[in-house]
Image (cartoon, rainbow, N blue to C red; front, side, top):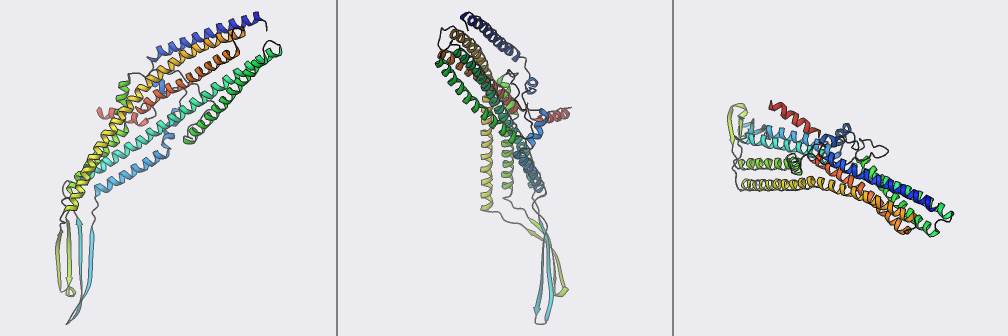
Length: 445
């Protein structure tokens, strides 16, 4: 290749690289301008997300969700048992044979009795059952929420690893073409063999990185398919869209996450339930009496009796100790609820601000890719003109590859951070929220 031809090719490559850099910068600016107009519906309907119609069935099929659904049925049964009460009719029959000096005769005694809950205890039992059901329903919702978070993590891990592998494959193909072109130049005597050896080493290293990236992508795909087999996976990972800022500020999203947190609701329902249990235990310091009917037949039926039996246990130190324990449990549950609220508030703040931070990082990586694209093009031209060595050119290409990979990872991280806020605020993959809001609208009319 003559120097004139190399000059023409280098200038064309430089113009192409400048145009590419300008396009990247313009796209970045367009994304920034569009971010303010992005809505929740724009984000949740993204083409890179799993099919919306498969989400509900995939979440419901998770083992922890099925277990929570079974425990909800248990809670309903417990509530029915509390409402009915543990007291049932008790029958006592005593047949006997009496012997006297004058002979013998048959006698019998029978009693039918039942304990009676004192006023107020039945209401407390119903309250305990209601809070048990409410907590179980929230635990079912939370298990679906945790499954949605798990799906998001696995899905984005697959996309991140798949696009990293694709990027590595593209870079490997580019180095292979560079190596072949350099080999032709060596054959023509236009380049040294040592340059070809260095290029071959660079290509082999890139091949190793591509193999590792592909293996990681395959592992992520298997993990996703194994945990959520209900969601079909395309042969090739869909392209990642450009991240956009969430509508409304981080503080509003933090408030929404806290307001809709199942974990806070579970902790508060458990605290209320434990408070009612403490009240019920305190009420049990006055034991429930039993009332019964007693019948007797003596001397072979010559004598009979019919009476009423009242049995009143006398409470003592044991019942007082149980009441003290229940009071302590209620205080601990209230403290646990406060701790859960503080933890969720902090996590919500972290998630909301992480979405803004990840978006800013991606935009910076976009600018870095544009700069590295321009620098790599200039270094290539200098190498072709003989103004710099192959080592500097390979270093520039290496930095360019690293910048592109970093941009891919930052793009996936920014998308995942925004989606996590939507999942935690129940705007994404939480169909029960729509039902709850529809019911609230109906009741408000």
